Image 1 (cartoon, rainbow, N blue to C red):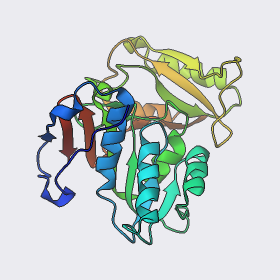
Image 2: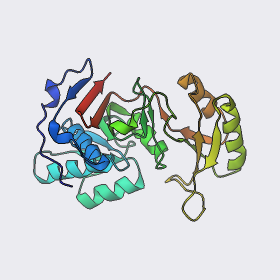
Image 3: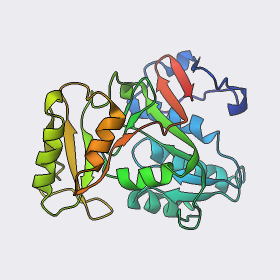
Image 4: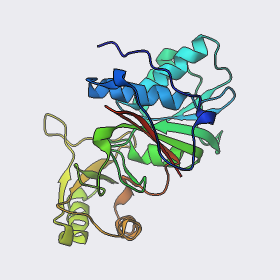
Length: 262
């Protein structure tokens, strides 16, 4: 379905100190992918010529990558360098002609745009259900500004409410690591499951690791404490909680675009 042409104010006209909803009746009856695209296009309005941009991974971020490439081709942006957060995004960016680099050559990134699997009230995130959490966290942790783009279905009361919280682990004795992860959150009804492909083989990340998905029956309490407990376990590489990292969240819903800023 074609996405309607929407007019939004320029980013500098948006109040940054409180959430703002930009309503439009034309947003009614759009699909989830339409909403993802609208959020992505809004985020790209913050991209300026000469920026180093973290390019996110996933079904929402791919719309932002495509839009940045379009603006470069039109001459509306120039001298933009992208830093991809996965092999998949790298391939897309190469295909559409975005110049690329990495955080070794550009340790400070001006702006990153990426989606999220969950966003809580405090703009904490779950990311990485697609398996790219380590590279995403490395690059988005190096950003001056991190814009998260989601549709309204990704907003949750607590992290883990809608599905798995992924943890990247080394393949060696992964079951032992998974059992220890599950034991950490027994009080939250945690069940740890290896992420697998359709044929039953383990999903392998871009870094040649496995993903253990943690499923919770209820909230896990202090997120920073939970993060520390997970990262202290030998065999754990990184987890999918992105705490206090997002500077802006753009939410597309049936009532319009909502922008939340820190």
